[in-house]
Image (tube, rainbow, N blue to C red; front, side):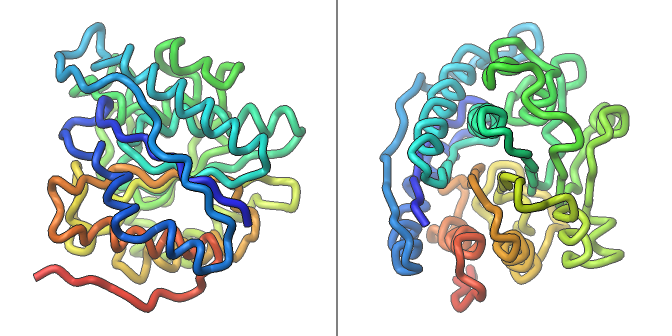
Length: 306
């Protein structure tokens, strides 16, 4: 498999600074080496360049909209280039607002090819806030809304079509921190959600079986992995940790089931914050879930923090 690692070192959309260090943390943890060892042709495209974090207050409900737009435009173009060269892009974030650019590129690619698209959004948060609902204005809490056409035109139109996705094209897994307005909005939009209550009741295997049930041989699968999906006892280096998440093994099973489909076409790995981590444990842990959908069936190593 031909893979392209695309670093996007920014936290302009985040509430807590530090996830701009995520791409470096993943590289130090040996992501490229691990993927090469699996037999893949790995191209490290280096880090994209964009505006710094101005750390300003929100304007009309959006914090750092010009900077977030600039970063997402650059991400969109880089992901589109990798797809055009028939490489699987792996976006190394950076905060989760970057998924607007990444998935917009994938959506445009699928439309051009007449291919169906399914996005599996793996996260502790719904990320479907709007300017009217957001408690903070941070755009890393709004990418799903933007992809569904609910947000600033600068972001909703990045795929060349608004909306970039329909609600049927995105399934969310692992949610356990959802703002009040988001709860109603998820129902209104009709997004399929497999939250932690559902996972606790039926198990990760059944949740992923249902989330992936619509896949067929004509579907491009995009996985958007926010590492705060995993319980913070296992992955402490994230900006917005939420207790009660999947165990290490549950997270690994999720990734393995994605791999079993054989349909993975693009991947985001975001919200790793080495500034809040312990001995680079979270990027080291994150390497293994990235390996799994890329062909590694088991997880032999686990770095424990104590």
